[in-house]
Amino acid sequence: MTLELTPILTRLQNMLQGFLTAIPNILIGLIVFLLFVFISNLVRNAVHAIAERAGQPRGIALVFGRIASWAVLTLGLLVSLTIIIPTLTAASLFGALGVSGVAIGFAFKDIFQNLLAGLLILITRPFRIGDQIVSGNHEGTVEDIQVRATMLRTYDNRLVVIPNSELYTNRVVVNTALDKRRLSVNIGIGYGDDIAHAKEVILRELAQIDTVLKDPAPQVLVKELGDFSVNLDVRFWIDPPIRREANEAQDRVLETLKKALPAEGIDLPFPTQQVLFHDQTEETDGHRTRQREGWPSRGIERDPRPLREIRPNSEEVDNRS
View 1 (cartoon, one colour):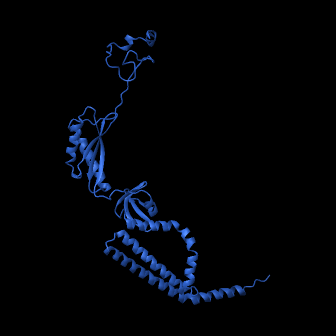
View 2 (tube, rainbow, N blue to C red):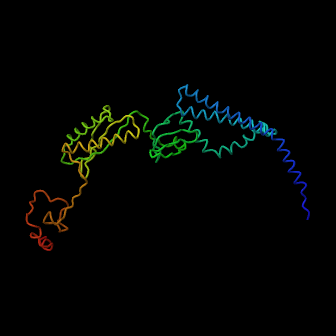
C-alpha cells in the first residue's frame, strides 16, 4: 500500500503561506491592542482623578476607573480581531456575541451578581476602606473593595476574600461606623460588700483613666446575683472605636479595678461550693420520709452532742417513726 503525501504537503504549504501572509495583520493588530492598553491606563487615571475631585470616596474612584479601563480594553480587543481576521466584520462579531449572550449570562451569573453588589456597596457606602467589620465568622479591617470581592485583613494578619454579593445580602457589623463605642466588663464582688460603695470606687477609678470618655459617662449596674458573687456590669465609652483601642481600654480598666477594689476592702471572690452532709444537720437526717434538704429549719435548737450519740443507728429512728 502506497502512502500518498502530496495532499498533506500541499495543505501544510498553504497553511504556511496563509500564516506568512497574516503576519503583517497580526503585528498591526498587536500594536493596535497595545495602543488601547496605553489608552485604557490613561482613561483609568483620568476617571479616578475626576471622581476624587468630585468628592467621591477612594473605593468608588478605583472601581469606576477599572470599569472604564475594561471598556477601552474590550473595544481594543474587538478592533484588533477585525484587523487580524479581515473576514471578521463588526456586524458578524456583535451578532455572535448577541447569540451567545444568554449562555454567557448563565455561565457568569455569579460574577455579574458580585459586580452589581460591588457597585451598590460603593454607591450606598455601608462601609468603606479602612473600616473594621464583622461578616459571619470573619472580623478585620477592609483593605480593598474590588468589583468582584472585598478584601478583609483579619487581626491575626490573614487576608479573607469575601464575595460582594455575600456582604450585600447578609448582615454586616461595622464597628467603626460611629465615632464612639461602648465597652463593658464584668466584676464580681462579695455578698457581704456594700454595692453602693463598690460602684463609687469603680466610677472614681474610671474617671482617672484617660482612654475612658467622660461624656457619655460610665455606668455600673448590678447584672445578676451569681452563685458566689454579686456581678456588676461596668460600662464605659472609648474613642476611637477600633479593635486595638478597645482591647487596650479593657485591659487598663480591669487592671485598675483589680488593684483598687481590694484596697477599699471589697472582695473579689473565687468560685466556691458548699457541701452539706445529712448526718451533721438535723436528727431526722437519714430518714427518707422525714429528712430536710439544705440547712436546718429555723427555730430548732441543735443538740450539741454528736448525732451518733443521739441516734446510734437509723433503725431507732425508723422504730420511733
